[in-house]
Length: 182
Image (cartoon, rainbow, N blue to C red; front, side, top):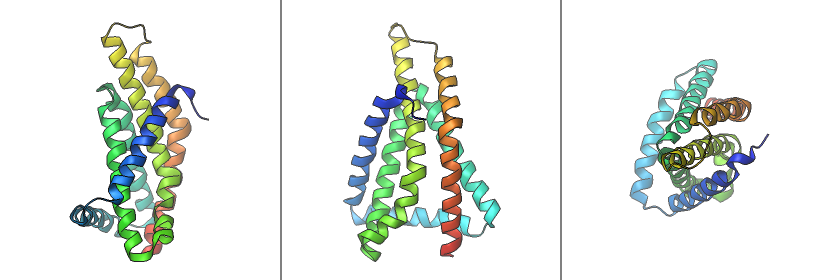
């Protein structure tokens, strides 16, 4: 299931995510308030949707985001790294806010569904994007590397085998949580 090709990229991006998450937990309160407002504005749009429509919208949004992260890797991996750091930071901010309201263990339960399915899916997709970016740089420098097209094809085969199923499960859990919390 795990592709050793992206192992170093996965490690680097996991460290980026962890550092960004920690930065989010210690971010100034004003940033937390701004992020909470944005998060609430997004959630309000979803709360009006019925179960199947909600699931489909969440899934499509996550699929589009992860595919964008892979494809944008051709821009030397900048977008995948930014996507991971911004998601880590945002989740860290939201975790701290939830912890202030309901305690650390309950806050951990609130972010757990994202950490088990959605974040790993994003990390894998971003790792492929970063891998493709490194291959682009290698080709630009004239070093021996396979055609970028073959790298992209490999990334998308792995995407549909690993990332997409994770996103389906994540969308189902997120849909259930949104409907349950209404």
